Image 1: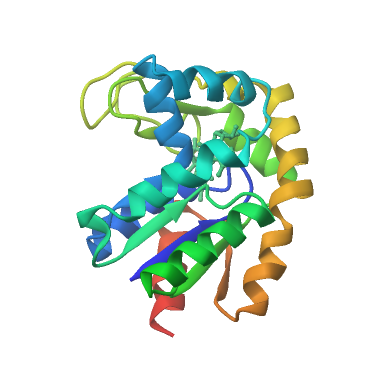
Image 2: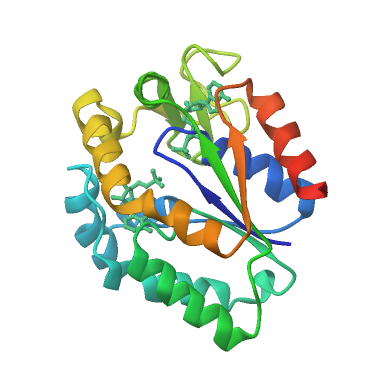
Length: 214
Ligand code: ADP
Ligand code: AMP
């Protein structure tokens, strides 16, 4: 299964990706996670990306595209993958199209998670992520068992630097300008599946599974 998750920041892409990737035994490829890992490891890419991320801006296309190409060529992507957070611009989508063509494969489905702006802000501002394993929680909607501690690995939870309200607002603006046009792009290819992302986490997951079966 070759899948892509589309949707504004805070829509629940990462949350659903965890369940989808387990369900179909496919790797979850999140460009945001890759950048955060690079920042944590102090790499040059991380250093460059951080500057844009902290302002709520997109990292330039040329820093993202090759990274995804490399990742898709790895062994664990042979039987499928779930891309999350990429593409975010039309040039990125075109580059992905060319790469998949070269590889002789197609995307099966683009899952578009739809959530209104006010909810997005509340979700992103209340998000807490594990410093150690990256798992995401929400202080109100998906709290960990013990406050501030990751259920999965016991790591400490923190707020992402780009989850401050003003930065989230900027990210939503950037999404509407540069990423939302991808809905029409993939609709034209006939592979979009629209999902109401305002439902509970489990209900969203069930809607995704239902859509994939249909
Ligand atoms: P994205 O990857 O699209 O930016 P996340 O999956 O990290 O979004 O979700 C953003 C925040 O909203 C997280 O704190 C997450 O726990 C919470 N969340 C995700 N899905 C839902 C949902 N269906 N209902 C309520 N909160 C949710
Ligand atoms: P995410 O974890 O998907 O919310 O991404 C966090 C941030 O990483 C974004 O706000 C961008 O700054 C950057 N980023 C992630 N993926 C991309 C991409 N495909 N193109 C450009 N920037 C990206």
